[in-house]
Image (cartoon, rainbow, N blue to C red; front, side, top):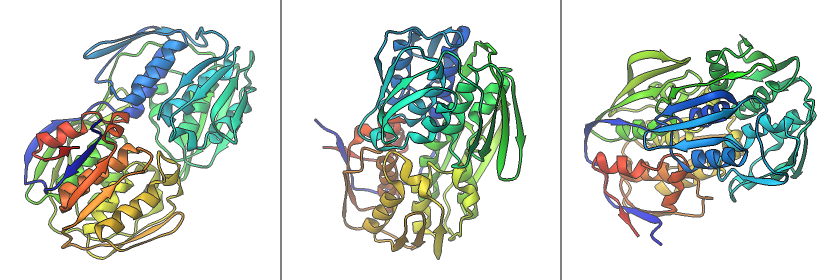
Length: 443
């Protein structure tokens, strides 16, 4: 089976307009909330990646009727706590930590045992960050030292809780928020700053939520037992997927690109802020609000002069999925860039901080890495003229795509394994590369 690619040539200059598929985080959250809503919800531009398909398949196992069409998805909601299923069913989350963690919030009221499993990568990730707070509602979890497979046994009467979320995990926060909907009373969360898609959707749906924003954390109050209204939603384009092409344009001489209708939620655009501080030419046009989210067209021009940065760790949570790409820009920047407090990177599909350092070393870029920080010694004149092989990275979709961007930006002969990993989040990634003029060969 052909499942690897070879890239042997840098990308020539381009001037294009592209569209990117729907935001993965919003696609999963829409599906979850629609499944427990009253009535039929419809979405446009739903991301049709493996993570979303696994989400929909699991919801079907929980008794939810779903129709996935070419351009739309329809979900007939079962109402709050309306899942219907046999005892001891198994839900396979695949590679999706977002679905795997968030669905457990809705299962705190499950009367029957449910087994949650996932792929090899997901099985290495920490689920205790959600089982710990969710157990306070009264649910029981049997796990493999906090990892999946996990047996979930809910309670008939989940109790509201008070919880301090100090990791900065939007998945943990969101799982608690979903669980709170099934309680009689108010749940209080003191949450370290992280993505706020769930809060915005709750507000748009007029669910009883209050958010008080402090400097370093948010105070969230949720009142339970409020039915969820149906939600028709055109999913904005994904900023994390767009970031690959933002960086490719930045690093490609004489190039310009516009990406249309992108979600620019302030809790997600750390990559844009960081790259602009490094000298990237990025601007927003047609900024508007859509059902609580900010969206815009993003215009990018190539940058001849990039500078190093000592990055504030306050930006980490808003760019956590894009640091492999940020490292590539730092590789071409003048001076030494420093990024710290990045231990959360190693809680992703692969240990991404370690892999970022490994990729830079293969490119010939000096770097010093610790368990949670990295120094990158940039080379503005970097041109790669050697063979580089990328494999055994737990099929992390972002490693595959970041290496593809590196190959197209810096040259060399790259052999990148496990091309099917892109199906996790961005199935059309290579088609977009071809549209911009990039050449690759399957083998």
